[in-house]
Every structure is written in C-alpha cells, then in structure tokens.
Length: 568
Image (cartoon, rainbow, N blue to C red):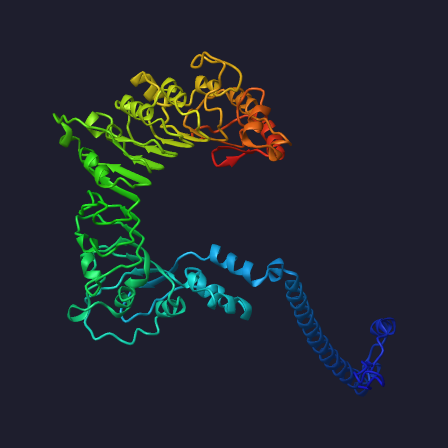
C-alpha cells in the first residue's frame, strides 16, 4: 500500500471498484458457456481477497491505535487526579497541625497471634500508625517523629503459649517495631486472649513467649494497662520478672474469676485509676496506704463494705460501683451506716441499683458536697424501693450537680420532678426509661416510665403543670436535654411547646457575663442548646409536628428526633 508523505502511515487503496449495478446486470443477462471468463473471475476474486486482507490489517492498526489512545486517556486522567491532590487542604497544614491530626486519629495498634510459629501479625486498618507511615515520605517522616502514636499497643493472643519450643526468631514481629519506634514514650498496653480457655502467657519450660515477654520487659514504661481476659494464667504470671510499675497510672482488668492482684500493692506508687470488670469484688484491699494517689475507682463491691472503703479512700474524685446481685446475702441483714464525707468526689456512677433491701443502697453511706456528675443505671423491673434513701443523699450532700444521667430506673414522673427541684444547678439531663408495654400496664397497673406528658409540661419555662404548681421553672440552667422514651403514644405538640419555651438565643450573650446573660431571659432560664428525643417503639410520627426544630437548628440549637432509626 502507498504511504502518506506527511505521517508515513499506509494509505488504504482498494484494488477493485465496487460496481454492484453492472454486476447485477451480468448476473441476470449473461448465460451459456461463453458468458463467463474464468481468468477474469479469478483475477477479481484475487483482488477482493487481497483487499479484505488490507482491510483486516487496517482495522487491526486502528484498534491498536484506539487502545493506545484509551491508555493515554486514562494516564492523563490519572495524572490530572494526582495533580488535583496538590490542592488537597491537608497538604497545606503545617507539620505541627498534621501531627495533631495523627495523634487524634491514631488509636490502638492491634497485633494478633493466632498460631505458633507466628504467621498472622496485623492489617493496616488495625494498626493506624503503620498505615499513616506508609502513605508518603512527609507522612512517614512525621509519623516516625511521633513516638506517642506507636506507644498504643494492643495484643490479641489466640495461640497456645505452652506449645513445644524452642520458638523461632520473633524479633521481626511488627509489635517489636512499634515498641522500638515508641522510643522512651510511656506505653498504653492492652492484652486480650482470643480464647479464654487457652494459656497465653506460659511458654516452653515455664518461660514467657518472647512476644509477651517483650511487653512485660517494658513495665517500667507502662502508663495504662488493660487486661481484657487472661485465660487460665494467673495475673502474677504475666509479671514474674517485674518488680515495679513506676509510672503506671491507669489499670483496667476484665476478669471473671477471683484472681489475686496483690502483686500491685506497693509497686504502683503513681496508680490513679483502677477499673475492675470482674464478676466478683476486687480481690485486693484498696486504700491510700496501698495506692497513695488513687483517685478514680470502678469496681464491683458489697454495699455493706462501702463505709469502710470510703474511710480508707478520702481523696476519690470519681467512683463507679457495680452492686452485687446476690439478694440472699441481705435477707435479715440490718446494719447502721454513718455517711462518710467525700470532699473531692466530682463524679459518681452506680450500676445495678438494688430495689428490695435498704442494705443494698450505697447512698446511705456517703455525702458528696462537691459532686458535679451523677450517673445511675439499673434493670429493676418494677419499683425503686430505695428512692427515699437516694433522695436523702441528694438533700444531705447539697451538691452543685451539673450532669445527671438515669438509665432504666422505674421512677414515677412525680418523683423525678420532685428530685429535679433539688438540683437547680443542673445543666445536662439524660433520662432513658424502661418502657411499659400495653400488656404490662394492664396487668401491673403501674407506669414505670417518668417520661409522661405531665413530666414534659413540668419543664415548660413559664407555665405550670399538675406536677409543678409554682411559676418558678425547674432546672433553670438546663442547656442539654436527652430523652429516650419507650412509649407508643405521646403528645408531640407538648414537646415542641416545651422546647420553644426554653429557646432564648441572644446576640448579646457572647458579649455579656453569665449573670447579665441570665437576666436577658424573661423567664430566668438558660437557653436550651441541645435537645435529643428518641422514640424506641414508635413506628410513625407526624414529621410536621417537629418541623419547627429545623428552624431552631438553623438558629443554633442542636435538635434531634429519632424513631425507627430515622432522624427528622
């Protein structure tokens, strides 16, 4: 084929011209032996065959050209996308702010051992420090300069620690790299045995496996330690070579058997927080003598021992109690308590509040004049018999409470309103009721939920209700209200009326002090800034009723109404 003088490509020039009319005429008129010349027909067919080969070659050339053009197109698109990345806002951040972002998004670096010798280590999703350091040279440089993101280590152990040795070279395990990159930074360690019936710590000939041993060798750097489940081993076995925990401040133990943790006594002088998630009381005596700086405790205990416990720990700032459920222990038990003053306690959480025996009430044993946050939860099915003891605790303490959370407490609306009248400093209130089905209400003749229409009306800023006879509003400083209701019917209009009555935005409030801003409200209540209402059992709610909340959100309130996983 001839070639183009400009581009050098072959020019397709067919050998024959397609004259279909002439061919049709010959096919209709020429007959007999002399009508067809074999040499002529053979020449035409040869030319047609050569032209078809030229067409196939040209099509192949063009298809190759199209493929090349598509490839170039994709490469240009990818190049453009990468050029756009130069405009990414995160590239404009200075290294100082980028490191702050890394520190916020990097949680625990999870490593896993599922079999020996070690084959499974980690994934980039489970080890964020590893993931960030693999993005680009700048991110890697900043990640390596931040030992804090490498110092958060979680080890999940699912292999037998007592398998036959000797072990292989474990120095290449990624956990070792994380420890090395953490430099001398205090460590946050979490140990979890994936199978609680295996023995994760003891290894060959009574020695710890090298991976766990490497962790325990660093106890002098441990600042926080969490043991989710230790399996069959004793806690002390994890620290057979440890003598001191010099900087340990936070220890959380998720045990379900009565293991001995006396090895901590006298070895953790800086321990400030201790959490025990066991099914039995913590098997060690806690006091300022054993842990001089202890200020935050979360554990299960016998209420009868609370008085002595508070006397031994006068410096507590926060206390979380799980009350034992063994009711047989309290049958026929009578004891006198003398409330112990906890001058520094600011946060108190009580779970599994008892309902049958006054001896199970922890509130008779304490007085907390500085309490700011109170969290109560229970699974009591019918009635809170010790509510009077709790109310006496509130009146006795006269605390400046700002946060109150109540979960699954069978409290009447009148009792709850009466309680709120004693905490005028309250700013954040969360109530999660038990909920009563129609069948329960018919058979039990009671209402276990305080979230009634009368309760909602009592929160109105300037109107009275059947539970509030005076015009002075309850909880006048309320700024955040969260209600989780199990009712199937509710007066939605009353809810909206109450919310609007507590919405007093002021453009001057930012320029005034609290006392002056308080006087701006004509009803002497703070502006409600956050409102959340959750209907757990309602399948349908008229959205138009809550439509005004959208306007309140535009004006600055955070308003959320949920039911059946739908948000208005």
